[in-house]
Image (cartoon, rainbow, N blue to C red; front, side, top):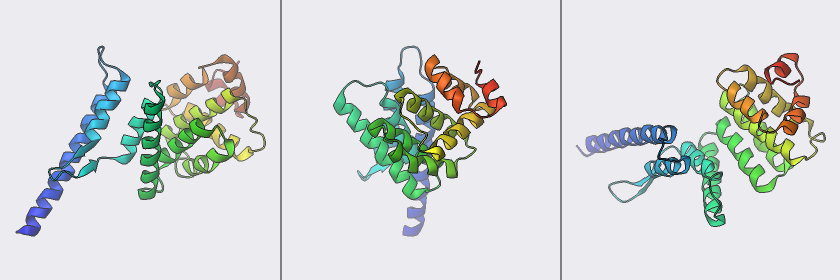
Length: 216
């Protein structure tokens, strides 16, 4: 009887967590006219972090929770809050790859966070390589690493001494433009700044990629 009750509790907990994960995604992806991206992310976070009936802290989907914290970095001016969001995002993505070493999206997000924190090409390289190894044709990884490419170009740091890094980023720009699921997002990134676009276009090595990026 006790074993049956334990099984029923675990099953119920899993269903409850799945419901919370679904609701958090719905909240985050459906911001109404009176809401904001920041408030949507905070509401989604509250659904993924809660206490169970015994008062134990619970976390539903560490990757997704980390992503919500990551999005808050771009809509916050308070330095203490920024540090809090950054630390939580970094911790949750790090925990994700310990549990799922092949989670390419988590590796890519760690590369983005490391760049925001250090702007060091050498420090982001290990994360980029792992993201590429496990997400070579993952459309979400294409978008994340295309964003990283744009940030690197914006920084005007020389990258020629790290050819493997440039090759990986060029790969994700190129295949991000080819994949219909990521094409518009990658185009938006490329077109953020005209001078950056010109530099990114110089990275693209195929005629088709140059055409897709609308490089003149």
